[in-house]
Length: 237
Image 1 (cartoon, rainbow, N blue to C red):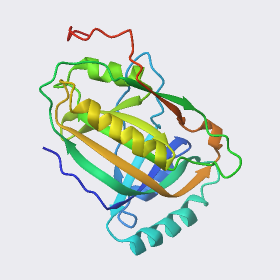
Image 2: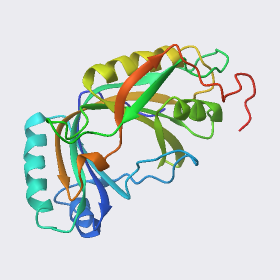
Image 3: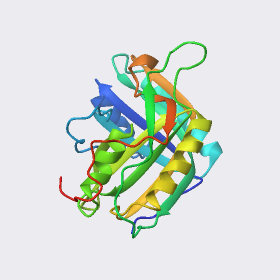
């Protein structure tokens, strides 16, 4: 079973283009970042996994801010880098118990939109990551969540491929999304070795990209709706 780390601070570099030299510096001994590359995504659905993803975490807000300032200085020496930095505080990181319930699709849907880029809307406020064992979990869970408006990617950790399902938005939207997800996962069967994490954005910086190019956020949540494309009985696919 994986560990959970609520209350820590994260910094991620998501690189789109011309990130190789910057990434090498960040992975060096001075900065101490670690590689957390994605290894694919569900076919047939939009995915927003970056070409490069490196991470660092600490439980001290002061050290977090010091590292953030140092990284911004470093990144500005790479004028052709395209991507972004995000600094996060982990508000929730909890295990999701396996349910004995029969699989069913969620009775809600996250309808998304792109960031406007104006009026201070430059970045998401928060995001949820539902992480679970891809091989051991029912494939219908992934399809159901994709149909319900989440987006997905795969990442290998300790030899296991995990599915990472994500939804992003404003704090109040993510609070409601978390409630809906936990309620749904308590009644539908088929998800194995799962955690749910909320990461609230405390810092961000874009390099050569616009807010409108970033992954979409929740526009509204439609509750009481259920996808008609999923078989609630069969476990194939």
